[in-house]
Image (cartoon, rainbow, N blue to C red; front, top):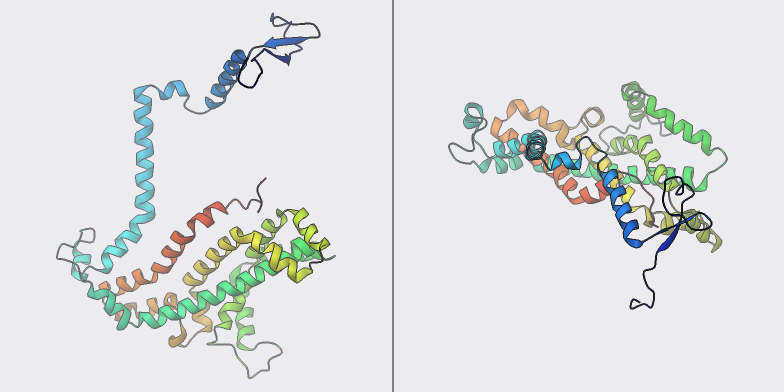
Length: 342
């Protein structure tokens, strides 16, 4: 007897084919199996499942195979680090390296010392601070508008579901198949002379000309809709039963459960706005309102190489820092699973 008052007696397992296999069978077709036999057979089954790979467990125990696999893993890891981080590290190194050293010995680590003045020169003389602020304003506005349109549009298609939701969903999906270059001219004409605002009004050199087109992002709407479709319907129906209206349901129930997908859309929106070049160049012709992505190519011919590389390094700080801060949310939300576990 154990401490709980029960002994580990054999357990009865139904095995209709046990008699054909030559195993002892009790009356009624039940085969008695001890706890030890059951554990041994379960362990054997797990080992069989784990062996279903290109290299089996027995082969991994061989020194030659083990060292070969370690060498391949090390080579792949180093290659990924070099390909992924190599350009960024080289840019960071070149940002504080004199021009002659970069041209003569591009891969040497500061043969004649570091030149930290490149950063201050790029920040002040090239006016990176002003263009940096413009980029932050554009990215913040694009993030706000994209998040607003994506969440409200997905909420309408997934939660509210009006009668024409199927047609509307198909129309949103169809816009993904239209090349962006086809929409460039009509979208620009709309910005130059917005409808219902008069012929004399123009949105050129206005940040709304960048924010509004970025807000109409069908990919973000469908992405958030996919996440909203997986939200627990019992919670939503319970809130409706308690008297929550559409706005209260959206702000108090749906949005708090959607933080993972909001993080993914935020990263997409800010990175896209930060690196966009063509559209801001068209609708923001005034250099004083242009972002870094537009101004840096314009000042390249008038700037020393070391200062220009320092300006590029400053421009890459925000995207890198953002990914480092949100990488956990971004990677966990990539699968777009449900909002509630269990």
